[in-house]
Amino acid sequence: MNTKLEFIESIKNRTKQLAVKIILLYNQIQKTDPTRIIGKQLIRSVTSTAANYRAACIARSQKEFFAKMSIVSEEADETLFWLELLKDTKLAPEEKLKPLMAESLEIAKIVSKARKNAKAN
Image (cartoon, rainbow, N blue to C red):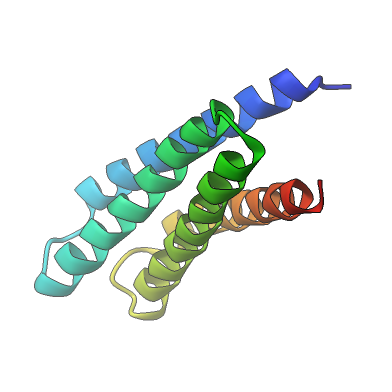
């Protein structure tokens, strides 16, 4: 059984690794006006998810934690939106997007639940 600290560290790592994978994917796709625009938004949202999760982990209060987790939840969902847009427009290979979308969805669910639990306390 993972301890709470191990779980927190695993989510820090997962959010960072998702950001790395998305940045590397963006470097591989053909640059057009739409891919540049979507790519920039996607990279902003995925790196914001990771950075704000780290910030939430060192929050000074429950209120600050909830506020940061609200941002994390929003950015994680936005990341999924941009990945879906790349898939639906066929601007990036679906086989490369699918694992990123699955991980993005899982992270979004985890952080959303953590945010709800924080509000309940």
